View (tube, helix red, strand yellow):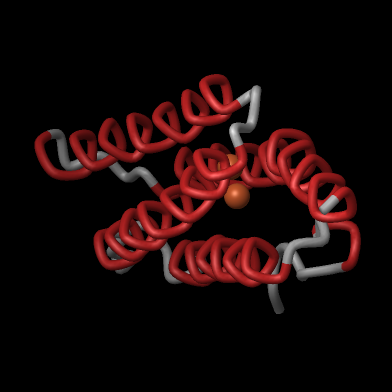
Length: 136
Ligand SMILES: [Fe+2]
Ligand SMILES: [Fe+2]
């Protein structure tokens, strides 16, 4: 069973962005599955690496769209992306140098961040992109 099922309320109306968000939600669910293995067996490194790679790809896609359209809230939006990458870095440090179990912290942060960023920050961007598209 997945912890967060993809549903219409998470769709914000941009085919590529919605597809990529689906991929991020899948990683959240994969993380949950890894956590259910228990602290002794769970290895979060592969999922953290996948999350890193996928986020780089997804954020650069959104940032390219913001760049092409002269989006006015670009700086704030990009700052949220940078904070996300910074948090992933902190988690990587905790896991590797201090050998901490980062499962719960990563899961709580990721679930909260994804829901908030998608439903507010990304939604604003897509509304703007779609309204520009209608004007052309
Ligand atoms: Fe974003
Ligand atoms: Fe996004």
